[in-house]
Structure formats: C-alpha cells, structure tokens
Length: 382
Image (cartoon, rainbow, N blue to C red):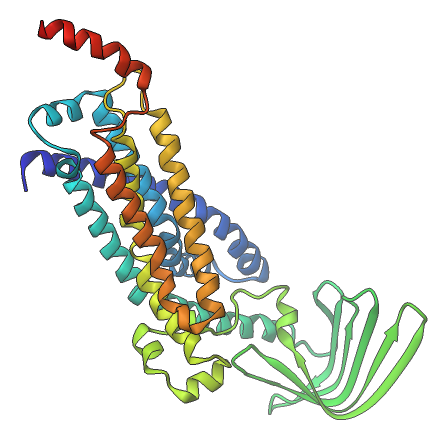
C-alpha cells in the first residue's frame, strides 16, 4: 500500500472511531434510561444495570456503524480537499478510482467488523440478555410474593396471599387487575403455583372464581374455574426484552432449519433464511456508506467555499440506499421467493459509487467556477 493510501486510511480510521463513539454514546444513553427505570427502580443492583448495558452494546454498534463510516469518509474527504491534499494527489496522476482505494479498504474493514457483529456477537449477546432478563423477571416476581399483605406491583394491580407453604404453594390468593378502564378483573383461588415458561413466569390458580366488571353498563360476570393461568410479566411494569425470536439464534442454527425450533418459535423456514441473509446483507452497508460519502465529494474539485453541495448530495444518496434497504426487507419478508432482494440496495449503492467516480473528472457541481477558470487557463496557455 502506497504512503498516500496508508495516510488516508489512518485518517479514516481515526475519524471513524470518533464518530462511532459519539453515536454509540447517544444510543446507549437512550437505552440506559430505559434500563435504569426497569432495573434500578425494581431494586436491582448497579452491577446488573452495567451488565445489561454491556450486553446491548453489540446491537447498538451495528445500528451506528454505517453512519459512522459515512461520516468518517465525508469528514476526511472534505478535510483533504480543503487542505488541497486531494489536489496534490490528482496532480501526481491519481484518478478518482485510484484515490478511492484506501476508502475501499476502509469500507471492507468496517464491513468485516459488521459481519462479525451480525453473525457472532449480536446473537450471543441477545441470547445472554434474554436469559438474564428471564432471571431478573423471576427475581422481581418473587419479591411480590408476600404473605398477609396487599402489594401493588404495578399500576392497577393488587395482589394478596394469605399463606405460602414449604412447597411454594400459595394459599387463598386475591388478584385485582383494573388496568383496563373498560373492564375490571378480580381473581380469587384456594391455591396457586408460580411456574416458569419461555415467555416469563406464570401464576397458575386452582379452584377459584373470576369476576369481570364491565364499567360501561355495570354488568358483572362471574366464572368458576378449576385452573386458570395469569401472566406474571404484568407485575414487572413492562418487559425488559421481547420474547425469544430468530434474532437470538446463531446463523448456523438458522441455516439448519430444525423442525423443533420452527415449531417452538412458530416461524417458517423463510423467516430463518431471511434473518440469516439479512445479517450478511447489512454488513455491506458500511462499505456502501463510506464509498458514497467519498465519491459524492469528488464531484466538483477544489473549492475555497467547501463541498457543502456535494455533502447534501451524499446525504441524499445515503438516505436513498437506506430507504431501499427498508423496502427490500419488507418485500423479502412478504414473499420468500424474493429473499435475495435484500442484497439489491447494496448493489445499487455501489453502482451509484461507480457512476459518481466515473463522472467526477467530467462533471462539476460548480459550473460558474468552471466558466471563470476556463478563460484563465486558455490565457495562460497563450
């Protein structure tokens, strides 16, 4: 790699580290507010809060990586242009495609990092996060199981237990749920058990009575039951994480298409294949973002007033690529025969880059400047 390539690549990596750090911090603060409200407010320690925060980092990085790569390419290209370093490189005989080589290497490096995150780190962190969320959910539920006291674990919910025996069986329970203004529910049972499930803890009541009050017409409906199940995740005042999904599975498991897992998740083989291909397709977005940021700024050449027009063009092209990415994901999800369509935005993005680099020596976004320079050049030649 030539000295210019190493120099530009180093500048890109430094700028990328800065922008990635800033964007991750912004996303992390938003997520940390939610985690703090759910964990610390429910009595969990700061260590659990930090653990959950760290487990959410890989997914946050995948969100900001394409934008950080784009911002780094725009920042470095604009700085090299303002300091006339690109002009010197072009005077040395470097064409747009030659100057783009370090940007391409930079995009491939960020894409490889994105690939590692999507296929390895994010599924593992999400799986661990789901497991820890279930454990915390059970801990929170256990603190509400208090004998002889009315507890209010969430707005609109009142829970009472007369006795908890040595086997963990609840005796003579009362549960009031008035979260729905239209209907109020009251459950009472002689005994109950708290059981684990993949969707969270459940309260299984035996030999009880369910009363439903319709507040619209003050009509009361009563139903006796031998057993009834109530989802105790409502006692947590909000779930920490969504139920298990294909996003928590490794790519190898997705491609294996196990019938048992398909049945367990109530998913189709197309859902598994779409998630596996999406992880690979998203890894191309940092490369496309970096190349768009560079190639758009190569239009127009040097200007003392900066490259604000080219920057606007690059932002518009990036928005177009991400819009196509969202549309292709929807289309692929609706028809399993079109799964490979999710690669189309990256292909279109690289076609844009190729066209911009080809046009950059032939096209300028500053025609007035070109008209002024043309007579001066002809006069100097005479």
